[in-house]
Length: 318
Ligand SMILES: Cc1cc2nc3c(=O)[nH]c(=O)nc-3n(C[C@H](O)[C@H](O)[C@H](O)COP(=O)(O)OP(=O)(O)OC[C@H]3O[C@@H](n4cnc5c(N)ncnc54)[C@H](O)[C@@H]3O)c2cc1C
Image 1 (cartoon, helix red, strand yellow):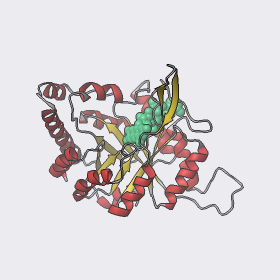
Image 2: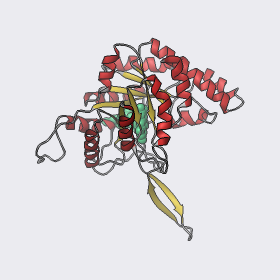
Image 3: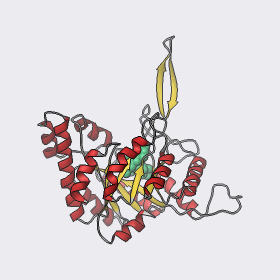
Image 4: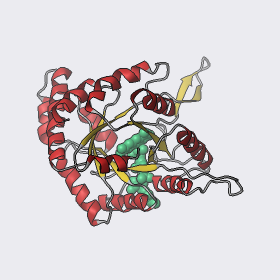
């Protein structure tokens, strides 16, 4: 079922959903099931599966020279989606990127997803590869997520890249896109970021999932600004509980967002990460309660491959 249909069916109640990462190469599907199993009691209508593009690593050779190698550390997005749909009978939502994909790769990827009975895709640009400062599209690929949305929408209308193709069957994907309550790190302003977010909706995206945030005011203001800009689609808040002291510096840097002082101080006072984890859970429960009271359609949790803290939060909310 489409995310928009799940929202309509919920009739104004708030549902639980979450995102998982494919495991590091070498692990099997059981590591995924072990994390999903404990969360199924909260009846998620869908589970997102992230996509991780290739990275460049440099290996030192015996002669001291460096050899550049291309590796994908977390492959398996499509296989995991199929496994989730088979085992749990809930919608699995693969993330699909501009980065690393030509238009032809994208079309073939979408064809696979259609054959697997996937109804939703999360369309993203992806970040720059780690060794580069700026995002570089693949040759014959898309520069921005809005162009990727455009291609998916075209396929939904039966428009394939090869105009000569016979017997063209339209796909029927519901398309989600990313929104940033504290603006995307490259955007010169929040207003400009919302301007381009609107483009993704105009091209055919029908719901938004936000980047994590730790201050609900930022989310509520973002929704207000989106509505004022004419964006009417559902906006699903994404939350992540902090679990380690290191994340105090890592998260603001990695995701270009601010942590509220009260949360920072509570974490600074912790003696170890067991205490930090509890502070993160309590903070996320408080955020979730306020979001549910505000009537959001879903609270979407970034599990990062760990379900125990998400379970502790969900058991207080759903
Ligand atoms: C919910 C969610 C899920 C994610 N899942 C993944 C994942 O699975 N894998 C992964 O690698 N990354 C993932 N990301 C990270 C995401 O790929 C990065 O944040 C990326 O840098 C931007 O992606 P986007 O789709 O928001 O890009 P875009 O919407 O293309 O925006 C990128 C930047 O370009 C600007 N912009 C857009 N259009 C234009 C234009 N026409 N002209 C000028 N500027 C423009 C925007 O304002 C923004 O600053 C996720 C992020 C979120 C919020």
